[in-house]
Image 1: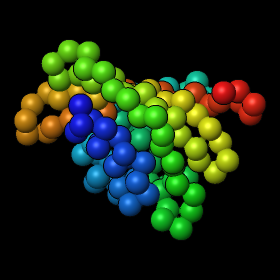
Image 2 (image 1 turned 180 degrees about the vertical axis):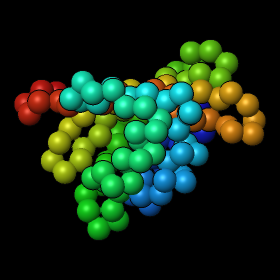
Image 3 (image 1 turned 90 degrees about the vertical axis):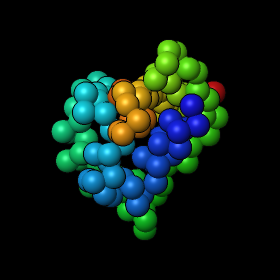
Image 4 (image 1 turned 60 degrees about the horizontal axis):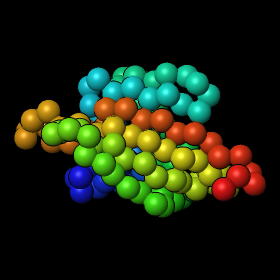
Length: 121
């Protein structure tokens, strides 16, 4: 579980986010994300998009994670939940990480972020 949490935190790091090579290494080839807009993103979408997305610059705002917890759902499958603050916005996040083999290690398989409206705890 520790490796999945470390991978999640790496994907929030602007240095990692700005590197297509690092993003590709941390995302599972079958990765999907459901964005807060409801749009579905694939592995290819994220590898192309994330380096230029907000949070990918060491000079700009960064994602501040908190309350990260994980549950082992099955061998090689971990569910992480946590919250982030980013540029004045608050979100609740959920990720699935899977490990298919020792060579590739843990990779993010699925992610969803849900905005938390102001005034909601």
